[in-house]
Length: 579
Ligand code: ADP
Image 1 (cartoon, rainbow, N blue to C red):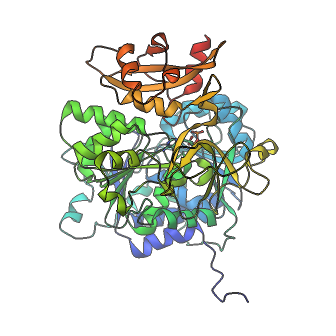
Image 2 (cartoon, rainbow, N blue to C red):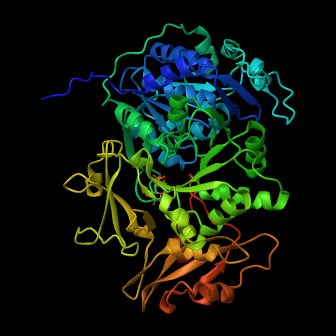
Image 3 (spheres, helix red, strand yellow):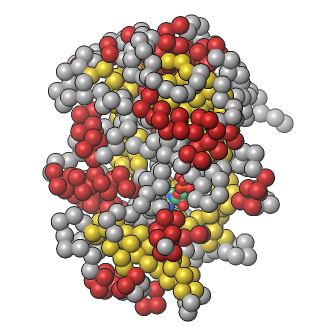
């Protein structure tokens, strides 16, 4: 017997339609590439999304075609996030920090038909344009047409935005159509053919045309950074994104709602900005997009001025913010929740935010391939009674699996490891928002098991409370004398030492032991520099003698090289060892 519920496709267009009907007056604030502040409402976002859908149609974009975005985090990128999938095409968010060859590779591989590019990013795209084989139209996004709706970014907000009208409880004034003025001039560029975003918008009609789409059809693409070989394309479906958004909104997952003001520091070109654009629209949260400057000097005032209550980003960002706060003083205003993932958050940082700033610092794990949320670590009720040390140890883990992510941790024989919090194994996942294959990539079959699980390439443990810890990436583990050393554990232990700002541990080939750990350590500013003997001494409480790095393998450097999404770039460090 079949159920008699409606066949109601779960599609991205429904999310923005709801935002307009239910939360029309909610604000979206953006820092434009020039540093000016722009604000408008969900009603404006919706109307411009509708126009943009018609712009895409006029450009000849067909359902299923890929439309690239090469942009920072701001409202026009958000409009594309909704317009492209709502008219049936596929958003391909291009990582603006990829090496040129990789950028050209992913545009060609995805066969992008149109690319929207921020004016400030034109040079990077121009550099690869001769290699692009499928793009028939570039659209440049300038700041023209935004004058009437921007602030000058000064702290006293002397711009003429609608900010004040929200303070007395009145809805902000409707601000359309000021932002549909066409560009007066386009920037000089070698990209061709080129059109101006606002010129296209000014000409577009406002007919609302949301086609009924198959919920299994593609709505977005994102290539993983490709630590080895070419980047691999993950293709999201409407259904996957919709279900992922519902899940992300659950109280014990991201769990933010209408009352929150959310700042995704994670780039919109990376893994759906961790679902924030979709979830904020679905639940009616005010959102703040930080544009291109995510330095602490820019982020901290923005968090304070806009009353940000909820934010998300990678550990390197929050480490920099912590250093800034300690130096400059002051706090983070109304901020109360910080979701941190993408790489391991050092316990010292978790402790500092929770204890010094009273912020609920929540560790999460995810991947481009999992849309991206995989696990989230909110403490369980029974942990309220644990000792502070015990609770802190639990907080450094990455949490329980999201309700739509089924997870297994297996040993070399494919057997599940015991849930003892100590036995490591390879982490496998499956679920409705987990990739089932990479786009057009026959070689990628090895990353999937025969019975349909995705091999994450992460090494993890699971404890009796079903809490997962990522101990390493398979390729980053250090194998010394036949035994494993977790590079992540060692990094975290070094970063907990006094006088250390950051540390990354990689393997150095060794004739006798196969591999030995080498720690690259950045000293904290104003200190005396790195003291290998003290680091080894403090590690010896946590690591066996054979695991400890030799003093000459603790090397001071000025900064840890980072990948395009702000993670430690161990590939570069390994190359340094060879060179
Ligand atoms: P890439 O890092 O290859 O560009 P992703 O952004 O998809 O691609 O990264 C996913 C990987 O990031 C995971 O497989 C895992 O190794 C790492 N990661 C994510 N969150 C965490 C975390 N909280 N702790 C440790 N590692 C993490």
